[in-house]
Image 1 (tube, rainbow, N blue to C red):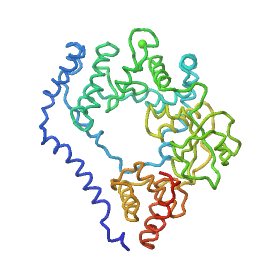
Image 2: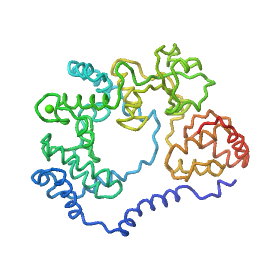
Image 3: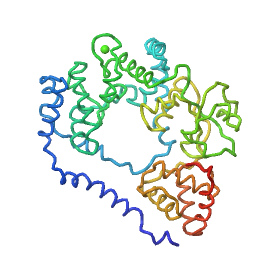
Image 4: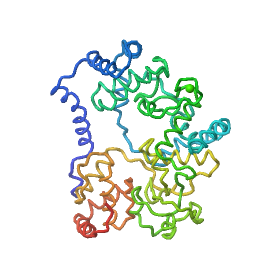
Length: 429
Ligand code: CA
């Protein structure tokens, strides 16, 4: 019973978090950093060199101090990795669908105009609006210059947030918003669509022609800016983001991967259908199959516009939620399949244990770190193949339980099977 004698994963996680917490001060010891006000002087000098005026800098930065709450929020580590169903159900609620449909109708003229100009569907803009700020109800109340200065000074992602701070100062210099009205999320995302300052500077539009790009209080500016961003990112007019599909029982699960794109006809030939079992559309488009909650959960086919949503936010769950909310706002039905999937959340401790058990069986995933990266998912797929399980690469509590029984009941067997899998050149990376 080898696993039972292994150290529990919680102390390892604690040690890991401790090491992470220590890395800041240790770095600071190597190169002592200036106090906040001296550091801010450096920012002022750089901003002046970029053409931002002294009055703007005075109005934006005078008297600001690091905001402790912003650091807390930045360091917050979720205790659990939520399941896709939980993620989706919290965001695509009946209330949000209903309100989105009403707002789509209310702003039809404006949104229709933007759809014709930028090719981005009205329902999609409303869906982004709903997910980003609950249709303008939660714009965030953190003072953006101070929040960005706090994060830039903090040291974890200094270069990124310093650039954003300088972009925010440039927005103030241009007079689009008053310094005290420049509020947003703790990380500096602003307005109805939660644009970071650099995105604002590159894509924001003054749609109502009053000379100000006002993403907080002027809906035409906010919607047009979002449409412009998506169009510039490559949104294909007339194409949708994706759809729910149904996979055949004998599907090659390792093909469910954003990197595996095939013509719709090729998927159809493998037995993939629409969610209700009817044939896929005959459009000449390529798609990838995604299983955000494993083979027992809902299945999606996503097209190239899905990648444009990912340019906005790299989370696959977020992108699926935006696409699904857009569909629901337009009157399409809820997801049809996959509610029977294991919906138990994995804690970070359980992820670490899952990784350690895979390592103990000889699977290479780099360092067991409690983070679900692509190497861990690839190792899970390899393990699943070796154990004769659907190779969906999905980390679930069911999978952990399987590993627990494997580690304790049949040591060695997995390794033999692993060698067989590794000898297979066609295996999924
Ligand atoms: Ca304007």
